Length: 161
Image 1: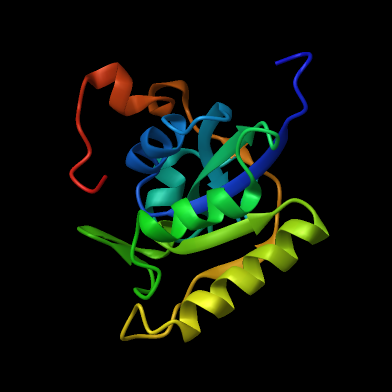
Image 2: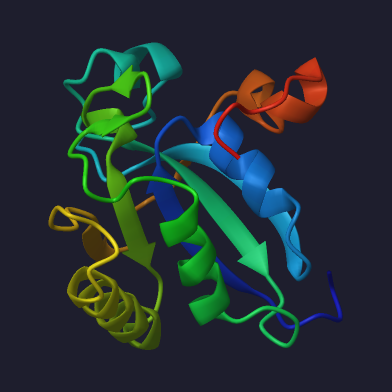
């Protein structure tokens, strides 16, 4: 990774285990980490976030090589791996920590994310309005080690991807 030009992207699309597993398989993604972002609590634990009172979303921080995969490609993938029309819910996971959110790291990422959402919303692909939040990237709190690459560690297959 030292000689590669890399950038970061941060997405929330439900339980971070399956979302991380899906992003890790993309060519051009060089590293992922699951964690918490968007809340009002310093150094939250998984137990803290699960209470729903911290305001954090479960997110995946994706480190990628933009010469192999573009941010627009990551956005397209993000929209395809979850339902962006359900507020605070993805499949069986319910709560604000499972909300659909894009945290952008640069003004260009913010612009692309807003354009992508607008285009998808007007495409008619979904009967409902897209509720995905698009916000500047706040502090990322890395989740506990046992959550990192959880699907690989446990040999589980995600039911959604």
